[in-house]
Length: 318
Ligand SMILES: CC(C)(COP(=O)(O)OP(=O)(O)OC[C@H]1O[C@@H](n2cnc3c(N)ncnc32)[C@H](O)[C@@H]1OP(=O)(O)O)[C@@H](O)C(=O)NCCC(=O)NCCS
Image (cartoon, rainbow, N blue to C red; front, side):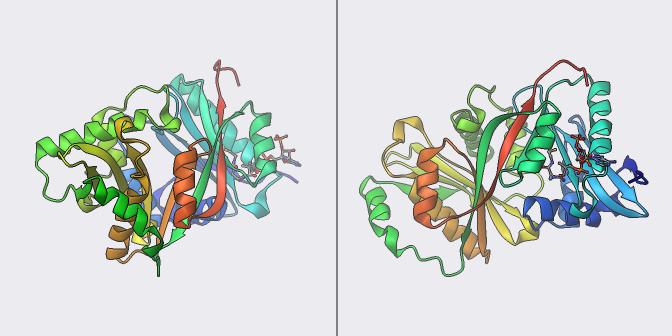
């Protein structure tokens, strides 16, 4: 088949077509508005370039080259997606070439990407382009409608018996917020996802918590010990135009591990999402994060297709 499509930079008018493709490929329900808001709140100093492949006026493929804070330092993320009916005719190849040219122009040789763990064809496509499997991230979802916490009474009582209480950051002063950001930054370095990576700057933590774009201090939750010491945290952000909550991080300080606090923390998050009228919670977990995966399973999270994260280290050669 002759290639008749063209590749050009993305414009805001492409947003509905973009999310139609990415929602189908990634099993999401993102909105065009959310995509444009995400672009608007990006730090202009960080790479974030979008292109589309257009055939007869129809957007048939998308490509994104962007900074992603969970990547190893120095890596940029690449995401190429082609509408299923337009695959196998070079659209992906052309978009990949565009992304690669831009990465080369930026002097970035190391790239990361993600492929659904149910899509072996796309995995092979990425591997033919020099990407190698780095880690596996599981995705899961909890239906909050009618979620019943009575099976977890013993877990809650165990936390109460330890003198544990929960608070959120609603009304917190600057010093407490700053302490929270540092607490999050420290806990992030302890996750399997970011093991060995440098500690995030606080501005990066602020951004991932949406503190400057969609602040929800009541979704920034802390577990406190009897002397008000900070033992753990859980954080949610709103996704899918407010239809779902994403549990970004649940973490327990190393000194408080093994005391059964992760599940009560998650229950706190669930209660707060329910109170906000939200029916679904999503989360992603590193496949080696056994304790968190076990907690999610007990709570009733249901597996969705996950993602292989792939890396292409390297020289700038194509
Ligand atoms: C991976 C993905 C982007 C490939 O898109 P695509 O448009 O089918 O890609 P291409 O057509 O360029 O390549 C697919 C294969 O079709 C064949 N092909 C390409 N052009 C062709 C043509 N003109 N005629 C016949 N066959 C052709 C080739 O075998 C090609 O593989 P190769 O380039 O490695 O040799 C697509 O499957 C997708 O959207 N997957 C989901 C998202 C994802 O996982 N992306 C990968 C990580 S970035």
